[in-house]
Image (cartoon, helix red, strand yellow):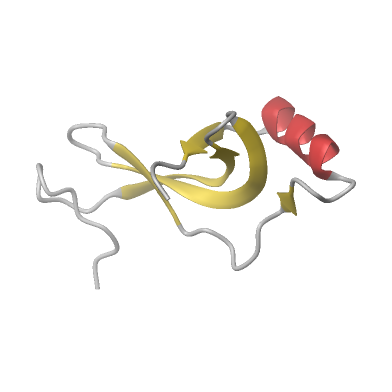
Length: 88
């Protein structure tokens, strides 16, 4: 069974990294509030990248005492992708 397929190129996406960090933001004001570990996938033809395979639980949330340390570690040691929520 194929994993994910690029709609444009009609080929399977390939894993690029299994340890990216996704930082979710409050919108107003923009402020990080949750950090996730996820997988980064890429289309071998056009290069489009998507994030998938999020863990069952976030690594840290804004109210936790270790949040700033986890955020700093993520920025220093991992590829970080920001997720700015829209609407809601």
